[in-house]
Image: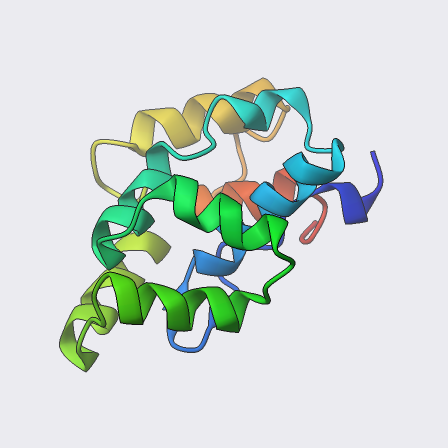
Length: 141
């Protein structure tokens, strides 16, 4: 699998928000027909759904904007206009919450199981889902 066929890191920010770029990236890859099968069941749900709920928009609207070839920044501006624009405190909390999912929370067992599934069960530096995505997708060793 080539790196251009994988979504960008969850840590990548669009404006101030983590994860938004990854959600858009997955939708673009799906549109191109190259998104790996294992990612498809999570489109619009999981973190994607959480991101859309945070911005008070529908995932179907994000997909339509992707089809229109809008940039991440244009899509986020649309979300702010048609959904909600979180304030600085809300963005701060969102970013910390998302960056730490899987670390000492109800997703910790999932992170460990995912690590073990690819032979990295003993890697202590992989503590969050974002960390796991980056290791699994070859952005970190």
